[in-house]
Amino acid sequence: MKNFRHHHLLPASLLAVFVLLNLPDIARALQYEPKSTNAYFAKFNPRLAPAPGPLLLQPGDQLAIIGDSITEQKMYSRLIETYLTACTPELKITARQFGWSGETAEGFLHRMTNDCLRFHPTVATLNYGMNDHRYRTFDEENGKWYEEKYSAVVTSLESTGARIVLGSAGCVGKVPGWTHSNAFTRDELNVNLCAFRDIDIAIAEKLNTRFADVFWTMFNASYEGETRYATTNGSYMVSGKDGVHPGWAGHLVMAYTYLRALGLDGDIGTLTVDLGAETATATTGHEVKSFKHNTLTVVSTKYPFCCSGATNSDSSLRSGTTLVPFFEQLSRFRLVLTNAAAANYQIVWGQTTNTYTAAQLTDGVNLAADFVDNPFCDAFKGVDEAVAAKQAYETKQIKTVFHSKEAKDEMPRLVEETEAQRAPLAAAIATAMVPVRHSIMILPAQ
Image 1 (cartoon, helix red, strand yellow):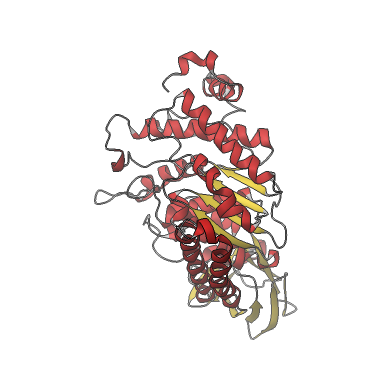
Image 2 (cartoon, helix red, strand yellow):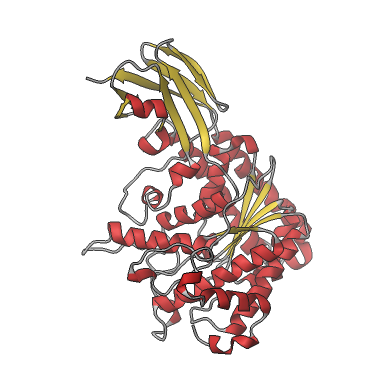
């Protein structure tokens, strides 16, 4: 990293980052993230991130999803809102996205009151650092500026009573073409982003807020994706084809980090079938209608997360779930059998049949992970499409209307009119969240 030789000039928090980044290997065990010995990771020694805490969300929270052009893509923001709507309906969370292309933390400070605070968010996720790092190597002055502005964003939001998840920027997959520069390598940009990520941890610790480790999670996912799926005929880029704006796989990874940082435990529900007594029970959000003739029929008002498609494409959600423990940690919809007499059973759910041992089913299997195409997919898609329509309007509302010439003199009227247009879009999300009736066949296997 450039300019670190003058570390006696660093402010206290940045000096702490410098010291941590330069500790000898023997001192790194408890203070740094574990990493592979592969050369891909050689230049990176990120601070150990704080573990996700308990559930940060409260029933009825209004979530603001804030960030730059990556947020304005309305992909990870859409995944977060769809997940909260479909997978945790009991929390009754509502959300708005406030993405703005090219923005820095300082840029959001200038528009925060006008665009965001008027809606009184009670919880917010932040994603800055990509534009702030200026697509160059780290320097002290820029790091100090970033720390000051990002801290001010958190402080301003917290002063309104909002709870915050401060996210780091992701990683870059290549030097983006719009920089028109060959002066820096991908590693140099990522080392800068990694330093910014460590600054983010320091801010989160100082201001007692949550931290979402987007950078290190995506950096590891990028390595996994390139290792598993890149071929001689094509690349696999978690950070997107331009090196910065991810496709669906990368946005799935981003959504995963924020949902984990929010403290969500991923327990969608458990269906328990006693084969000996021929009875069945279900946890909250699922109602057993019957169990007869080896068929369990359930009505569910809580959905597992659904994503089908290719597992080797950086443009697919399903691919992203193979790079992080998404289903294990965020979408567990379990089937448990007791008093199983056969050695193996076929489980038929929707159009898919899987075979398990009795021991596996006694421990419980995760239907959400094992049945990609399942009876929830159509309903889940309906919720997601309604979320997408609403979030698309929110970009228009904020960027086009709230910053129009009329807004200077007629803001109250414009807010009222745009909220009236947004209201049915928000209502459509609730309407799309319909109960799903589904059946599971449990058949002894030969």
